[in-house]
Length: 189
Length: 189
Image 1 (cartoon, rainbow over the protein chains, first blue to last red):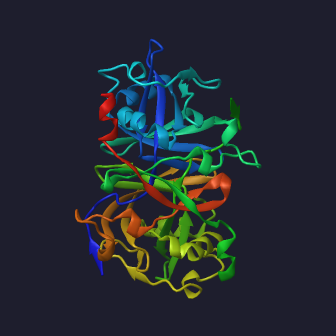
Image 2 (tube, each protein chain N blue to C red):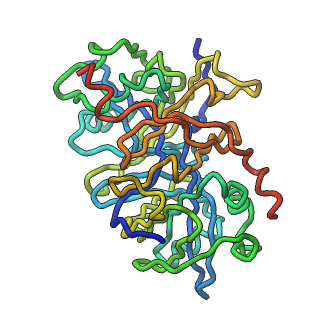
């Protein structure tokens, strides 16, 4: 039996992303966001949706740039802190052992301890209501060399990314590989 | 050491979503999408990004409605098939043991075998390049009663949603709970 739970964004799991930006004085800020994802392949684009009142919202609008960082399981306390604390009130990088470093392509900070980071140039802002949807074009994607597989891309079992389940208020790790894509479905073609 | 892999959408994991729609004759179609996510809380909105040439793209534009279904691990072959086969060439529901049922709120088919389904009304279409970003407002969110936890929301360990890692061409299961959100980071506040 199906139950109608109402008008809810019951999508899960979502990725766990840490968004980096600078203020006008060049002070770095970072916030955790779970409302985000890939939204275009060419040009390569990512969307992150932020509440209008967020400090990062004003910074990204001003600089037209942000980074999208993928943290690892072991950094879950820092990730949760970066989602709770506000850059309006506290310099978050003074509270956590994380290192911001200016991107090579955009004026936004990469976070060195996270295994993957992308530099994004702001392309579009779409007002939706509580959140504005920011589309960023990825200009560079950085990964720790020690997590790369033999094809040169991050191995998820080494990167150990987090996922978020909003209505469960929980972070989850990545499980085992279930199947290869564009492969397991061939039996039905 | 960090390595620049180039201008890539290196975001992972992404959710695995099956998008349901009807054509003008009421024939149901479904396609798997991994470029999607939550994008607003109020109104509750989800974004899915589809290539312009996709059959589903034309159907959603015509009906201004779609469903977002969350399949389970055991349905990975069907999911992969729904991402490979084209609705321009084949009636996909004739090839798989999945049951479409018209939504109560919108003119799009829920897929009954999947543990979670949302009915979405098309709010906006944003052209980005290879993909158009569709924003849908969620009008109803359906879940199997047997996967609900004691708070009335889906238990991820019962729903067993898939995640996708694009550059790894793989579907992954959900791992163990790593931490509670808005909780584990309090030690740093």
